[in-house]
Amino acid sequence: MNQTRSNMNWMLKELADSVPLTRHVVLLSVDGLRMAQYGADTDTADRLAAACAGLQSLSAAVAHEFPHGSGRMRMVVIEVDGGFFYLMAAGANAYLAVLADEGVDAGLMGLRMRDLVARIGAHMSSPPRMERHPAR
Image 1 (cartoon, rainbow, N blue to C red):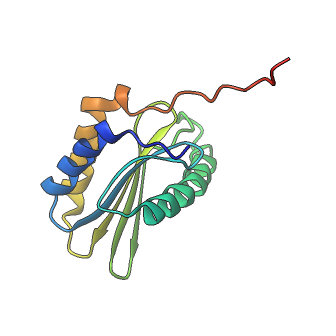
Image 2 (image 1 turned 135 degrees about the horizontal axis):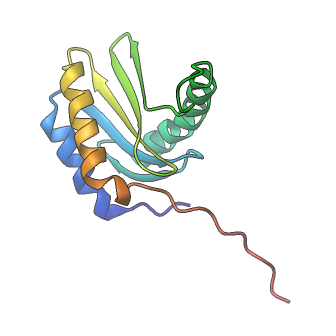
Image 3 (image 1 turned 60 degrees about the horizontal axis):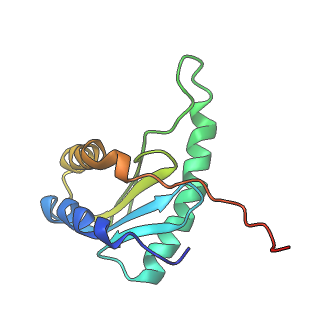
């Protein structure tokens, strides 16, 4: 799936513009395919999307350790030298990933990500893949 949802790119740009020090924003499917991007070249966005698939799977495994929870990952934040990584569930089978530089307002980033997902969550989902049957 090399096609992105270009009509979503402006929404990702709006998120990046509203939070200073935002570097990259990527919308991805649950299996790690890039659906839309802002601020990242295609290779970077594809690498982030692929890494997120593993991270959301790991997060879901940890979530199952909470007996009264739903077992679903809502948000992961990772702080590394140089900045922050955010991954948030963004609709059925879709995730929103953000890389931001050191000094970003973490609370503002979480709030803006949640606002974006709430506003357009229905549009930020990845449809199930259809199996192709060979022609007979």
